[in-house]
Length: 408
Ligand SMILES: Cc1cc2nc3c(=O)[nH]c(=O)nc-3n(C[C@H](O)[C@H](O)[C@H](O)COP(=O)(O)OP(=O)(O)OC[C@H]3O[C@@H](n4cnc5c(N)ncnc54)[C@H](O)[C@@H]3O)c2cc1C
Image (tube, rainbow, N blue to C red; front, side, top):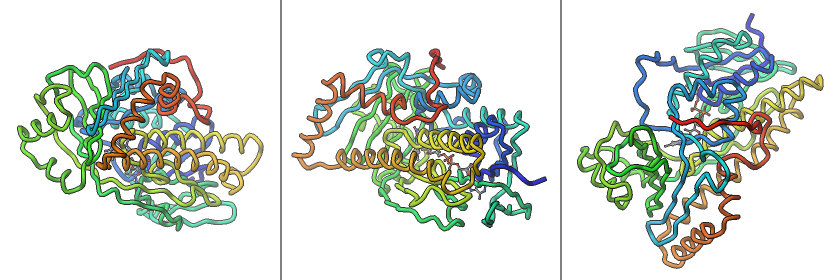
């Protein structure tokens, strides 16, 4: 009874997406998730929201969950503005010059989680084990067996780790990681501003880290304020009036004053990259494979591309009568995604380092760089199309087109 084609450990956004995609392709899937979902009526607004690219939207569309995510609340943003607190450099992007209806969407994680969960529950190919925890893994020649904390054994040809940056499965498989502690944390909160956000995602680079305002409904925004860890702690614990004043000051009053705010959370930041994404009968996706600086809001988007790329590789192997858990098959996925993810991680690192530097030659250079990109239509388009997931080596699910505009 507990024999599957694929076992997925971790049913967060990335793991649930992989399960939907593989279930839709006709494979028998087990998803093991430790966290019990909060019932819909009892969910609270999440202070942390995600910027979701067009590529991720296409993946959700091809799985048939996009309409259900939109119903729960998404906010389409049409413009993006990035500027440097240490000089006059500014970059502005708008969707019209790319011939697109919007640049992307701001979405609360629970909207995606609930829509994906509904889809999984209606798919007879998918069995959910929740709440349930992975405990041990045993690799055999033809199979992999996973034992859960309650003693159940699950067997399949392949196990996928989608269990987040601390991935217990990655640890159990003995896959090493490279890590770097940024010594920064991101303070997140929902805030209301006196000036309208004009459907724009804003980011100001300060020496301690970037401060982003992501637009939401009814004049609210979600902030991601990255600071040295001790400073983030202090900001998280300020009383509301002091927090409002410091936040408006750090944003140079760009959106006026802060008139209201919700709960604050602080997320410590680390870069992490797994040395390998695959072994025979095992593959890593999402944060289990890589954790990236949130300054360009790419983490979950990269994870969704991993899930879609791995699905392509598994489905192609089955069509050719090959074993989808074989190392030679899985290596194709590793070659495809590890390089792409490394490129994005390195770019985020370089941006974070460059903008944290207060030495004047570098300040001048980066402001020159910002102005250069801003004044070149072509450079701006290349930059934007890549960040939106419209270009690059995309998996099949991220390539479908024909979207219509949708906003919250
Ligand atoms: C401040 C901040 C802002 C961010 N903003 C953005 C953004 O705008 N856009 C973006 O794309 N990304 C953003 N990210 C990144 C994003 O949060 C992550 O990339 C994303 O959540 C990773 O999803 P995941 O499904 O891979 O892992 P997770 O969300 O960590 O899910 C892992 C799942 O595995 C389960 N699990 C763990 N251990 C076990 C076990 N033993 N057995 C069973 N289940 C287990 C957990 O319960 C969890 O549900 C941001 C990150 C931060 C810190």
